[in-house]
Image (cartoon, rainbow over all chains, first blue to last red; front, side, top):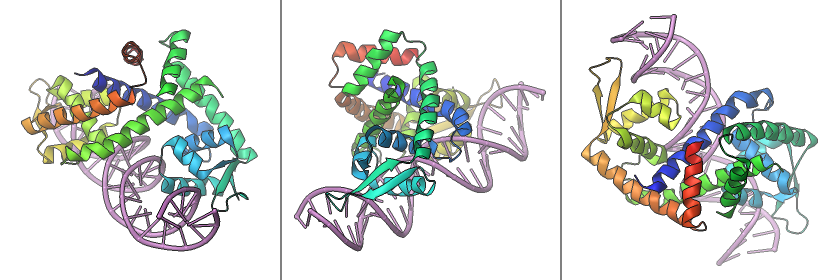
Length: 137
Length: 137
DNA sequence: TATTGTTATACTCTATAACTATA
DNA sequence: TATAGTTATAGAGTATAACAATA
């Protein structure tokens, strides 16, 4: 079996484990039921708000049509604010409401804990190396 | 932003990129349209055939009810064979048909290529280290 | 009583293409 | 002509619980 295939399988399993762990813990906090993918969007907005829909779409690597729908949901739940850009009137800028900000922090704390546990078999230096490598990809 | 969150985002993006690349190249080979998840099941069977449904479910980290449906599809397409175990009559053993085997090899070659490209920014030693770390998790 | 596998159902996420509006 | 965003629709993947057969 090629190394590349093993890598694909281990990464898939890794993601899966995190996903399942989150599913068990996130509900306590995620009362709005944004889901893991909704969480990812909120994180991405939090990083660089105000940010255009286009930028969030690119950073998360998803499709813009999905973004529209999910954002509509996040907006309806009072987590995200849209406002038109004055520079380019095609652009919509996104930012978090205080409620959205609080949710991001709560979700990050849970996700952080899950990742920390999952990475436990690695030394701290290895964890740093892993992150550095992934960021280079 | 915590390192853990950055890790989650980079891993998510990494998986996403591979997924998208595959989607563009796999159709040439995946005439049965098993999809990435169907491919993962086939790979897992290929590794250890004949293998019980339960074992494949565990190794892929998915749910058994999903397995049932996907296996039914793979069987209908003539890629997978089921046969009852003689040791334990609750157990169903899975193996690949020649057609399934050929598909696995074709898909692996494509996936291998995609992963290789994606990992290009890393040195060969780093790639080995990455795989080794992931396997330890 | 526990385990293997199946069925049913509802839900989330994804892909594609056609569309509007601004630039 | 190109880009930002929306809409519509179909399909793939997932979670949950209830169930039958075997151990």
